[in-house]
Image (cartoon, rainbow, N blue to C red; front, side, top):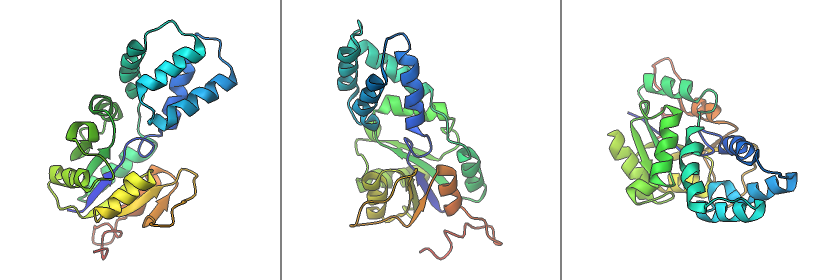
Length: 226
């Protein structure tokens, strides 16, 4: 069976949209300015800033009378629960399964928080494998995490990786021997040492570019790619 691996944050779910919803709800009780909101967004770093550091900065900036560990714990439940697949993702993956693709999610991050995100999307029962770096002990762009995903899906490591991060998803996927689709979300590719096989503006389009039915029922992006 052909293998299709996908990233989670900012790939099948627009994390920026979810963060925008969260920050609006979180700051509603406080007197915040547009500058405060922009500062908090920058501090978040697309989710890469450790949450203890993030909330320590927010508490100081806004003068919140709350303990950082408590805020981190609340975040770990509230933020993942807001995750929903972007439009067309579930339909695209259901179509891929109907065509015989094996599906896997490969994501970096905290084991518990990322698992809650996967559950909230409803994809846990749709994919064949879930590999979270915090749970398996290796992270993208290491080849081993892609190997584990293929092993858990029960297929060879031979197929496609869809993701938004040039280094982790595209560079890692290429080094693992996978073909890649970069999810641009309005950005321009800025690496000159390697490039994705394809680009797409949104996850549904990325899935369609890989999973294309043919008269024989096999995805055309797979036929003749190896």
